[in-house]
Length: 340
Length: 99
Image (cartoon, rainbow over all chains, first blue to last red; front, side, top):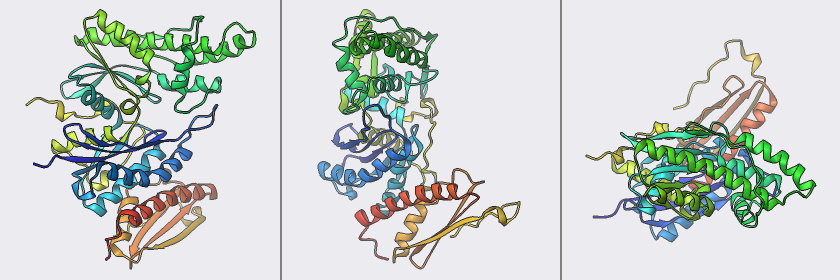
């Protein structure tokens, strides 16, 4: 029997990606392009959408060519319905609506957060872990229970990646390949630990106060040569990641799960992985993590998650191929996780 | 197939700024694919901007009305972006659609 194949589109933030995946999780192609802004600047919806408009069709071509498939081989088209920035999300939605009519293929709408989780599970083989989903737009501790990915803890203001990105702007670090990567490299040279606010509220975390504090501290201490930018990056990473490890550990105790899976763009930070690995080993569990190919937003994760849903009889009629800036992880009924 | 325009309850005078344009695909199929793809997204501020689209004779017609020029400009420019994407997608992948 022919393997089921999906073509997936991701464009909810500053990456546009198109991926081809089979139902067994084999990634046949996964090209993407990142919108990189000058140092000191973030990405804005309109400009990001223009970037995606410019790159999406060449990416479709390249995804099909690399996977050595033609449109005839595709079973379904999958796209990110949300959460994310409106204008960039619209680009994938419009392309999918048109391609679905040209090729006569069904569409499956996918939740971006759930796609990160499923991609992480299939790549690492983690079966039923506590998931820490950390990126520029999201920070959640998640565990599967009774048909849904339940959110056990989350940020009450900005995402951890947003905190890191915005601090990189203060230091005018390069956004290439990503601000978080450059903070991570600089942090390796940090020696002096500067105490920062530590804000864990039960299962939730808060980062905006830490960002304000370190923004003010940076200006003051750098001017008076009390510390280096490297010291600040090091201190910020240690503080933020300790908070994440704490709430992840509490979720593990609550749900009685031993393993942890880290997904999302911040998940490729090796210091975060190292801290989490220590905590897991102390509890007799394992850490599952992936590198930048799968952690960072990509089309294959959307294709794979959409294909799981499609294989369980789910599809999205054309008139419902919409997008939404807010779409919580626990709104999705993960039918493919239910054991029959 | 064409949607009906909703008339503002406080009269037509409010919708002072308008704009009309047409894209000729020379194919009923192609024009309706673009129509179907773009009709799904509603205008974000329906009290400020209205968009009405229709398809006939292989052509897609679009009519905008707005209460202020800046709303018209913003909606028009965002719409043209996605219209261009839909059209390019057909040019790139839909050349066999010839009716």
